[in-house]
Amino acid sequence: GNSVTQMEGPVTLSEEAFLTINCTYTATGYPSLFWYVQYPGEGLQLLLKATKADDKGSNKGFEATYRKETTSFHLEKGSVQVSDSAVYFCALSGDQGAQKLVFGQGTRLTINP
Amino acid sequence: NAGVMQNPRHLVRRRGQEARLRCSPMKGHSHVYWYRQLPEEGLKFMVYLQKENIIDESGMPKERFSAEFPKEGPSILRIQQVVRGDSAAYFCASSPDRGRNEQFFGPGTRLTVL
Image (tube, rainbow over all chains, first blue to last red; front, side):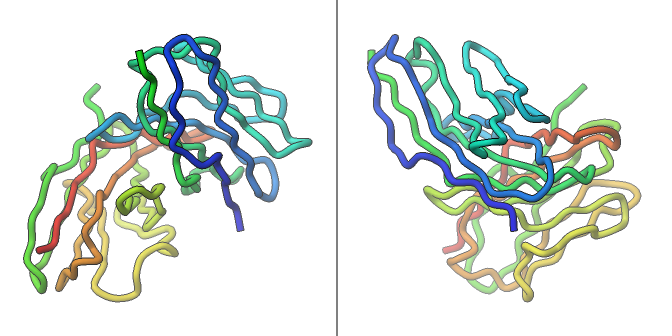
């Protein structure tokens, strides 16, 4: 079945540091890939997505590129802020219309001033 | 357009009681998904419903858990005879009908079983 493996946390960085959170997946066909962010005590918010190979999703300075050859969707940001502190989830959905999301285990990110 | 609504936000039950969690999808969305998040873990799929139909319940425990999405009103996740292991955050998501469906999440219901 489909699965997602995320870089284990927690990750602690200083403000303005470069961020990478690794995500690899196993899936049949051509899944859609997502990064969600969860702030303390809140639900998940979609951060970015990509629906086909070589697509780059981007939002709020975050980027991730759908790499089919390496089955990866790593999240990057050039300069993090304290407000980026949250838990980040990589997820995929199948390629047959409405499909359940399969999540990675999440990576807790803390940014220190 | 209001987002996905869930209530209650927090629910406390004693062992053996019933828990009812409600989810109102975004306007125009007819697909509803329920996920469970145990402490310090990712979200696990439970059930996927479309109006009046259960499409995929492969993640639902076989006993005590049920879900519905009636023609009128919110989707309900029902947990009978709750046990301490049911303590978790339960999230609902909804998606529209067409295209590569993006799911929009509600704020969650945090269930605590004493």
